[in-house]
Image (tube, rainbow, N blue to C red; front, side, top):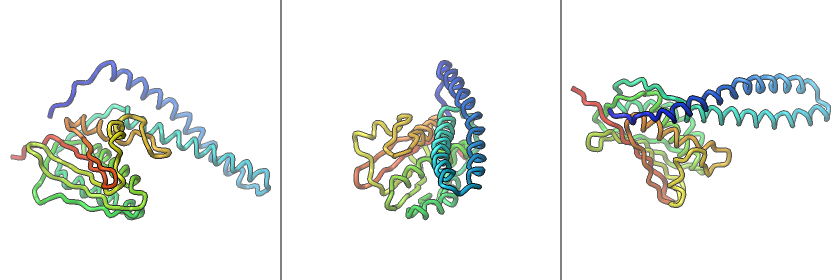
Length: 233
């Protein structure tokens, strides 16, 4: 498997920024803990003044939690991924992820289906990271189908590469937005971090693979992942 050569300057910058994010996250955890304790103290009083303060506190807690989530998403995106590679049948990986995600899909009125074929599709991958990349795509697809729909996970072979497709029946992506969807912090969703898709593509690239997208407004979106296959003797 051929992986791209790391850029030393970018690696150093990533380490510095990642360290800064960790330094912010530590005191933020303390802030969140104290906000929780303060909320418990206010909850002991039921007069109008304390109720007003509790409402303000809940707003601060919501924003602090949002900041924590932004930092978590950033660390997943910018952090260095040490791949733990092992041979795996991608059909098993996708089926495990289907079983894990099924309750969330059902709660969003999304019908989750898989098409994995009958032949094994072996790759050397970091299973946890590949699952993270696929899960990011599945969550993105589910959020796009606000009124429900269908989500299909398909595994197959294309030449000497494994092929994974994530297909949804959502509203699709306008042509003018397709060039932006892999940009960090670009998002059309309110409150979205804009890091889910860039993180997924980065993980795929670190495995020597590629990720592309096809979309047609009104008909849905398909993400296509190609990964080098492992020869099985």
